[in-house]
Image 1 (cartoon, one colour):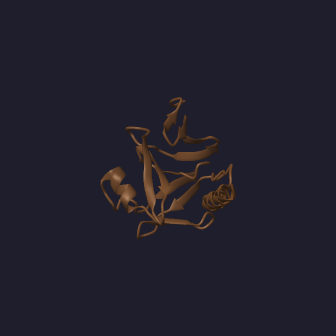
Image 2 (image 1 turned 135 degrees about the vertical axis):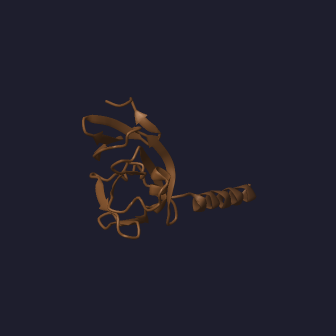
Image 3 (image 1 turned 90 degrees about the vertical axis):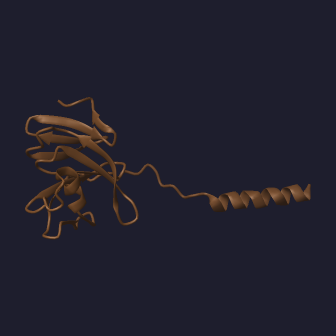
Length: 150
């Protein structure tokens, strides 16, 4: 009986020591999009949210030209799950990235327009990211367009 009690206490303390502290619910969304100029090396820097990354790979993916970033700016917003939604003028897609140990990893690519976006704007519409381009509006999630274009 005494051995069973000791074994139970050891197992209980071991289980408690292995549990992970979880703080929830958590909302990682940014209330406003960031419009970021791209520097000569292809980098964007957002001091308000402490994020910096190089865009050459993104522009290569979109235009098959890693120098197409010159003179451009990116539109960036973060959803409540912590995913980054990125697009720019003339992009045909919205790219969704997740942060992973010092890098941005593509989570999804959402096709928007064969002709490219003219003047895209992101808005936070929890649980969606609203993409506005002229008169066109659509709600985006990490999986794609929710309910189709409006």
